Amino acid sequence: MATAPVPVTAAGEEVAEGSTAAIAAPQARGPEIAFFDLETSVPQRAGQGYALLEFGAILVCPRRLVEVASYATLVRPADLAVISAATVRCNGITRDAVATAPSFIDVADAVYHILHGRVWAGHNILRFDLPRIREAFNEIGRSPPEPKGTIDTLPLLTQRFGRRAGDMKMASLANYFGLGKQKHRSLDDVRMNLEVLKYCATVLFLEASLPEVLTVENLVEGASTRSKTNGATSPEAKKSEVNSSPDSSKRQRTVSQVNNSTPDVDNQESVEPAMNRDPSELISHIEEMKLDATMHMDSSSSVFSGFLEPDDVSTECIKISVTPSYHTQRTSIKHKDSPLHLCCAGLKVQFGVSTKFLDNAGRPKLNIVVDIPEDLSEVLEFCDNLPQRSLQESGSASEWRPLMKKYGYVNRPTVRLNIPTTVSGDASIYSTDMYKKEPSGNTRKLAFSKVDAAELDSLFVRGNRLDAFFSLEIYDYQQNAGIRLVAEKLVVHSK
Image (cartoon, rainbow, N blue to C red):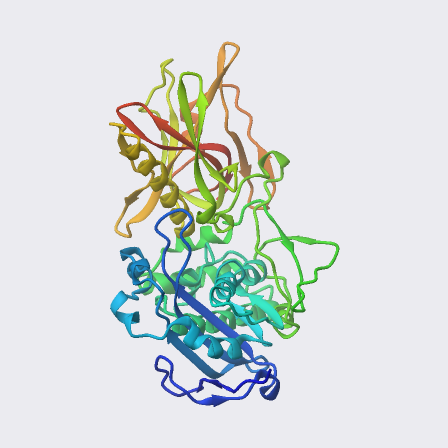
């Protein structure tokens, strides 16, 4: 059924919420790429979904990468109570701001015409924005728009550009290129997304043009010096992020049509800095409308295949499981009915090995303190709240010990990774597998004849980077309770 053109503003005009200017359907305007972003409420409990609060999109010419039109609107949710304090902290959208905004059913036509039949682009849209769009249309009983192709710049840039900007989130990339602070508003974020893409492509082009001069190390060092001048991150932190990728491979799926058909064979290639890559590869991904699936850590051992990166975790699927155990009950945290095990790359050691706590046998309880990125912090905060509420509801008198602490002037979250030991014969050994990753990328397993805190202290030096695979254990000692992170595998990066 034919429908009317969508109201959108032309490029260069001041955009107000829901402002209008006619734009023809996609077939009449050519193959514009629709960069879009959503702002939503922050779920406050398990099972609570996301409420759409803002939609913003720009149409971009794929040959010149310039904005040709834009559209943005706030969206009033069915229940204003879903806009919590956490939501306001995240994106600044308040209940008053959306109280008089149109509901989604009122703007659904505009959103549909902007997206349907075009190539969709955005940062982490496959895991977040795309599902939310489908949910919003399903809730009003309408078929959702379908893309001609999809470009998710998070996995695309992680693979082609390497993890030079740490966790590769939009805020980190913007800081890396000196583009300012991410505002977490839809239209601002999609424009920042486009600029980040241009910057990355330019750097890859320059490196490919003069590979012997413009090495990754030189570029990162130069960027670090510039950041230091502007009062941003230190050169040491920037250099370490170049090698922050774990022993990982990227399982790549190419999807070029709306039916999401995939090749029978998965391509696997290491995620490394792209100093020897042809920048035309990045451009061809955009022009041919290809899709890179999200990178995951490959632990080089099937034993660790059940560990999830933070972006692979859906908080809606995290549950507390209580099972009988002898004369008590055992409480655990599960994700999709399996025990939740996490992994994260490039964690920075904040405090080295501590031995001040002892177990029942008088052996030191070894642990280290590491900085964690925002995505891992969000997952752990959610995990920390669930058993805490469960404990309170059960009438326990134990004091809950927060899983995360914040240090330094940047107030960055940190966690304690415990390194358990077991008795083997007459000696104690580490239960944690530990590895050393050389600058060449080769990884070797470390052998220890006994537990020696001093030996570990020389390994986990403050400022060192490591990849961590760990499990979450809930404890309750009647006086205090909390979650203990138990390191199953640690890969320490050589400087």
